Length: 245
Image (cartoon, rainbow, N blue to C red; front, side):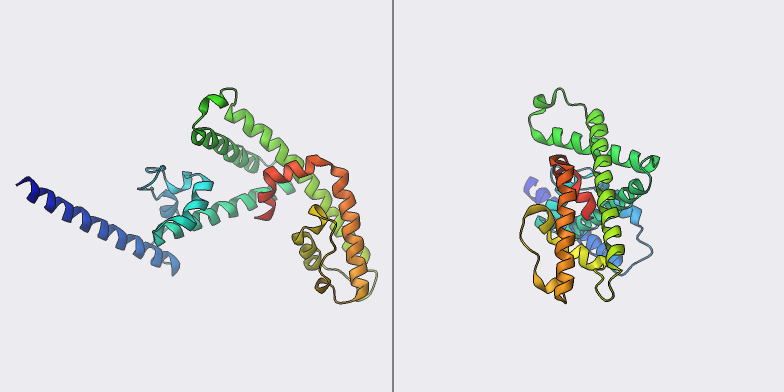
């Protein structure tokens, strides 16, 4: 009798899981085609039913777990859900970062990053398995210090942006020589100006004169970065991901 009941329960559970899987697939398809009946808020409130963060709404799941899950989870539904949540958070990070660049006193942006940094510290402590090592760490205080460093990084970035704008204006004096922002950004993305003394690839420049101007740009920008000292590199290491989003 017990075996028969157990078998029936097993079948029921299996069918329930199948229904849930198909519901998840339907949700992803509907989201993909822009189904208006599936709200963005519904996804943010979706609760994990697996793993070490079982029971958490996806909007509260640590970022590093989302990054892991979007690549490693077996479920297409949850991989897509994790990737979408990462995109959502990155978009907010970028918006708030730009707001701080425009106005360092922006209350909404400052409050956002304080909450973000405090949550990251709390997550690091809880995931460490060695909470006693953090006895003197107060997440709220750490968040305020991290926000101060973010403001310092923004000051450096604004100085670099000013340099770029002035350099572009300067090169406009030469007809047909202008290095536009797209070319300058390619030089910056290549990271030659930070991490090495190597010259940029020749294919970035259409003429010898453009190359000369590009090399002058790199040389002067390196000097400006060097004037910031090691502090700039440390700030980039901590908050550089916000610049790249």
